[in-house]
Length: 156
Image (cartoon, rainbow, N blue to C red; front, top):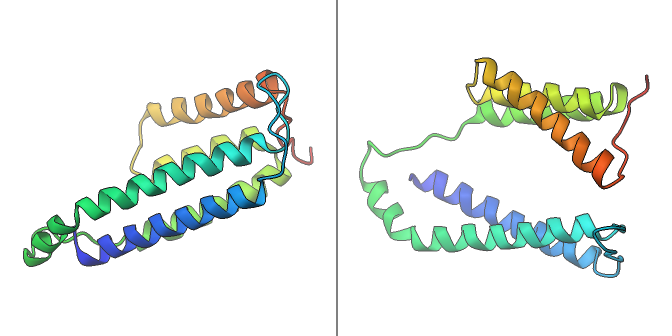
């Protein structure tokens, strides 16, 4: 792993750690509820704990890999590039998702976003359409039907 990629991963893990701590701090007093009656604090607290665990795990993994980074920096073959096209593509995809959620609703926004993300990652076959439809369907079943949390329906 190159020094640039190593630093980028440290910055990403550190920002995720700060975000998780801020999320848990802001939602500390919100009621959790139960699995049958989810209240306002349930999802932010679950998200905060998961993000906290994953960011600590990533920082620990990077700490263990610091020796490999020094060895890889000496060899020119092992250089990784930072993918600016991917960053711009996924940022644009996020904006498209937000606009489509507002105008067309969550289900259409989810399908279009998963299709776009898969395309940016190099998926091109029928599996991408199956993934997009399955993701939207499972999200709708989980949130709208099972948990009773309404998803954005759009303006139409």
